[in-house]
Length: 395
Length: 94
Image 1 (cartoon, rainbow over the protein chains, first blue to last red):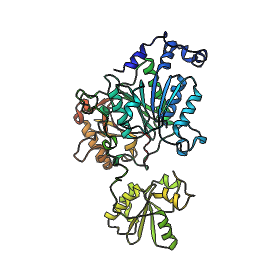
Image 2: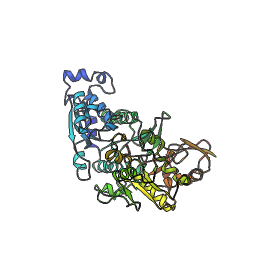
Image 3: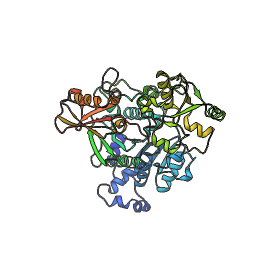
Image 4: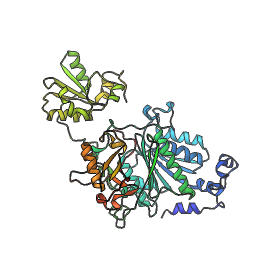
């Protein structure tokens, strides 16, 4: 198990050496006995694959590159967007519109020209994961969705490679190491993902910008410790961090002998369709078709200009209303059932939210509650900004 | 027995925005039942339609996963901390 890593941990200073420039660069490592020359050479020989170069991948990449990890692979297919800059500290304003992989690789190579950066501008899939992972000693998961989480986990277990895991939500993070020999895997902790309907929507999403900085840095520390073979790793421990309470807690993680992928009788022996596993339908088959009629922003504008009597109901949260609004009456989706008496069923109601998902639920609810004339704004206020009024900011 | 139930960030919206709730219970099952009586919206996030704890929600008494103790029959005593720990994926883009 983890043979590359063990070989690395046994590596001796006889094989490669450090140049004069490297000695200078890594001097604060070299003068501490826990790293020293042996440790620095282990770092130089190590190969780490970072899945994602976003919020978690940024501090991770920066610290691994700075520490002198000899070969760092980056996997990302996204493009830098303005809304990334609040937390994805690898990127600057000038990078907006660039491929993340290019911007990230340039930044890391600038930070440390002594190391090799491998670029994989691709979406991680069941078809390419094993091939991508096989050359690396450690995989670090900095992704943002359940299908990829399970894919990374299963590929790591199948290849017997440690998976340094971190995830974040609002101001709370989780960190551990999965896939270590005799240690638990992600499926031991969570055998199944939540059904899509129970995953928090944009109304409940968001993340404190510094949170991925802290969690990604912890992932970096664990990765460096694995390479050095130093200290106590997070294998078998789930570290929970709450930035609001500023508190760390720790829970025991156990290997589940009945785990379908790492248990004694595994039933998952190759990579599967993770979108299907997570209950996510393909692009061609969108979520349950709503029976509520939709109206496009352009048609809505035309009707309003005509002076049609339309009651605009905004079902977003108050903090979203503050960002931008089109003058609708605000009743957050979660409060709709008990505030339904604020609505006049004789008038035609146009429900809208940010992207159209919550308002479709709201419109559905109103129809079952006896409201006959209900419309849903297709694409929400985002589409309104695109098609009708570009002065409305998008978020 | 007075135990503290720690509510994770994603579920606080369904629990009156509380970070933790004190309940009186002798087992984990009783503690969660007391919690869902107080906050009915939490129920569908913790339990499936068949009344089983959902597989993406783990429950701990102090640092021990109840799946490896007596599950919901795991006894709790004064001062114990029951933690609900759901899986979170990351950026939560919708």
